[in-house]
Length: 230
Image (spheres, rainbow, N blue to C red):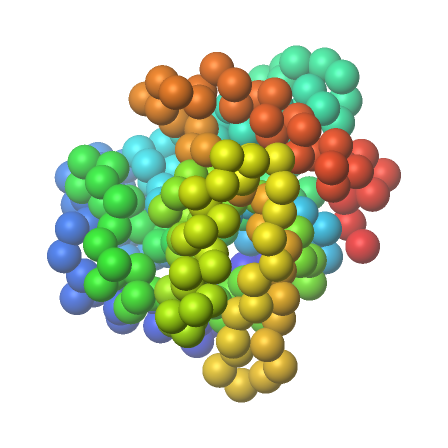
């Protein structure tokens, strides 16, 4: 699935006035720095992945979660579902149709630094609409602290404190938490978050453990080739 014309225009208009875009990388691959990189996937996918923001390879291919960290995610998913190693890059792209992929902000920042809270707040309504109106699933595997705490933006002080307190728990990568998002014109939707560490190779603390942690999450969600949609 894809964004409709009104949504794409809203993203492009907001990005046109945004500081911090990695214009050099967009120019290198002849890509518009205003075009959002949102993978979406099947609207009825049971499981979603929520990351921080796109990187260089995501800009190159206009597809989220396919850089070094994203490939680790996709290779782990493929191994869990099919019991074999990922045969080639094209196979990793095929997984985009079986899961719902989304980020806090769908643009690459300079230096791969996390976007400021100001920028995340600016895009929060648009990303919330995509998440609540274009996807029917409710189970979300968040990748890293920034992605998880995004769900506290716009929440009450007590709810934000509850979400932040969960992130401090030692068992946060084994347990889950329900979070409700308000919708501008509709009934609020509740999602179950299954946080994991960020899969970047630079994350020395968790990188080697990440495949095992993701496999555990996929087992918790009973992810199988025959029940990924519905």
